[in-house]
Length: 300
Ligand code: NDP
Image (cartoon, rainbow, N blue to C red; front, side):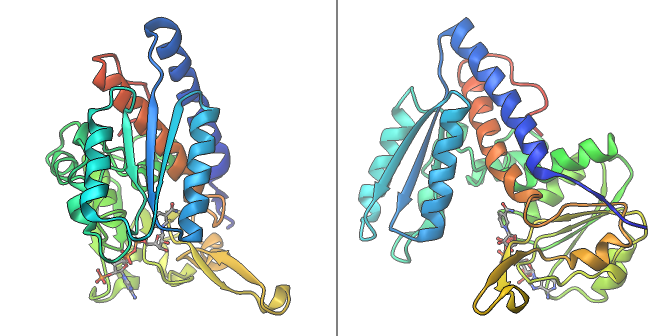
């Protein structure tokens, strides 16, 4: 058996097209241009790349992109003042503060200062509560992207069993909430879970969000199951030459492919969906802020 590869890159392109078409309708019919503000503190090279990509894709979808780059030694008061300014700005519909923040800044304090209606990362405590009580929330981008791929793969997820490996606030927990909302029977596994392999082997859906290269192997997977690999791990690739590196997921792709029914690759699976869902959340936030219908197929 060789699993169907779920092409996240192609799927993300369709999400971006839907976003762009909704943006052009907002502009033409209502004279509104959605705007996304991204705040980057410090000069972490990986974060700079993410922020650049986000800005580029925001503009390509026809939205306004506002980048705020602050020095590494920015004070908490100055950062909070910028967040308040963006909260009050009617041209800004989405605000994202790039994490991680430098150590002297309290991430929870800063994230919870964002207007929940503009919290396109879905990390504000109000959005966490709304999601977990089944109400309309801004949903974290990575799990939202995973959910979209699973819905596309299965149609209805109702009654399926799912194991989410990882319980972080940004991936594992919201992923489990979303699957529960779609009526899956959900188990969350983590570093203290006993018999994790056996647990995974019972699942119709396995979502791996661990941060451990190739931890989930083919013998953890039930034949025919769908495997969503959230992990992004950079490891040495001596087969490609000295000092060469490569990206792998939390799933050992080759062995899992032989057992699973469908699987996301790394790279080219969940990764591209994350930014696409950020754009989707921005257009959703804009529609909600203006009392307009939400774009179809772009929300949870
Ligand atoms: P965290 O480090 O915050 O959480 C990792 C989770 O994995 C924890 O809950 C931890 O358990 C669990 N874990 C660690 N070791 C084991 C183990 N041996 N067995 C079972 N569970 C274990 O990571 P994130 O959720 O932020 O990210 C997970 C991965 O996803 C990373 O590779 C990250 O790079 C990637 N990622 C990818 C994104 C994308 O766009 N594709 C976006 C965000 C993240 P415990 O709580 O018990 O310590």
